[in-house]
Length: 138
Image (cartoon, rainbow, N blue to C red):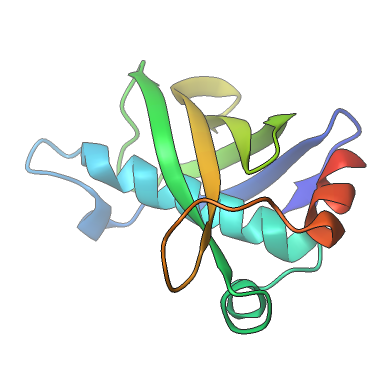
């Protein structure tokens, strides 16, 4: 769970039996869960908790789009490293390159675009300046 000098944030998770399918490998949708958790931990590292966005700023971040490449499977008991790198910030969205690896071998790679939306109306809005300025410092 540490930031690196190149703007990447690493977070680790262990693969449990419940994460795997009948073939003994991580079920494909669980990679999305691991990446979501890593993005949440990235925000927490920046000093932001999810309830603050919703309850105080009246915003939430939603996945707008994702391109994902599955290269190799993860297996039961693997210690995965999820690397999250902020690659672009727009007015109302930001994009990550996320990689899931084991022993420095990339298993999954995804480009993820998140949109800032009003927490009630679910309409796109600008990222609040206090958040955007911290993201831009990375």
